[in-house]
Length: 206
Image (cartoon, rainbow, N blue to C red; front, side, top):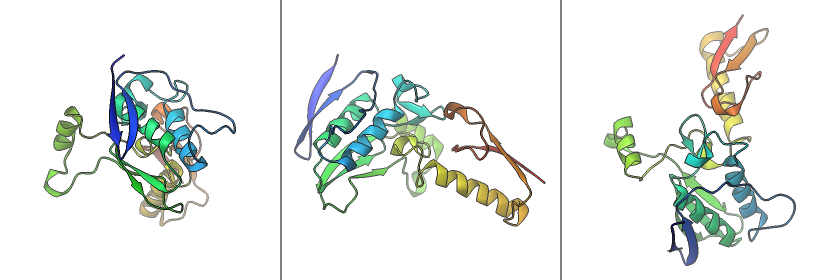
């Protein structure tokens, strides 16, 4: 297996380049230096579990192209950085690649993530795909690249905003007495009422 070592802000990380099945730690035993770091690690690893991810070998969590990390070297580098992260440090991840660990404080976020950001003149799918082919960016979907997946700040909030926008546009923000059905969930499973999905095919009838 190909392996190399690199240094991320003084932390030596192992970056393995090939796929290995992953499963998040369970129970109360820490594998990181604190529970905030452990929570981020477990969410990342659980999203790529073979029982969860759409195509774990390709780092795709759901939606056909929503990735948790840019490549397998980046994934393993993120894991090692999280395991070494102190309670007063913050890991910065840029479009699926760990780019720095900064001294912050205990009340700061342990991880900051920015995905798929392009600016101004270069903000187009053509430019994005070009950068993607070069390994310089990835598509994180709504939550695959941020590891949140299900939570009040993740997909549930996005789904709420989607339904709220549809209600505002078509029903003056009043869904009372309406039957709401969602489908087209892709890798997230079967249809559910008000299901959490990044791209809902939604029917709202009177």
